[in-house]
Length: 69
Image 1 (cartoon, rainbow, N blue to C red):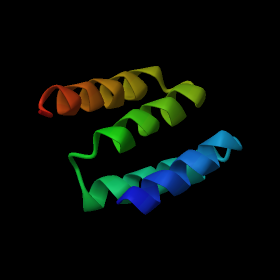
Image 2: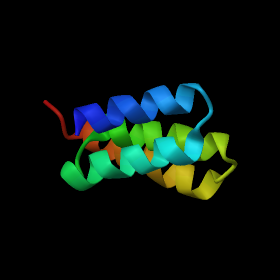
Image 3: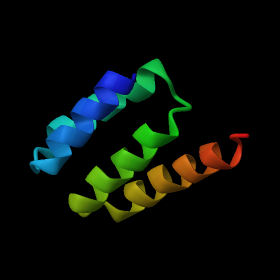
């Protein structure tokens, strides 16, 4: 999952946002509780102007981070 997340971040950094989202979704299929992937999905969605979906992804990331020791 970490490799998919890292690839998604790299693609997002060069504005290949649809590809970034696909990679982040792969990461989340492997680990649905991966807060960093949820956060980065929020970033990509925000850049695409998909505010509602971005907010949901950010909220999920925050929930998962709260549960960490």
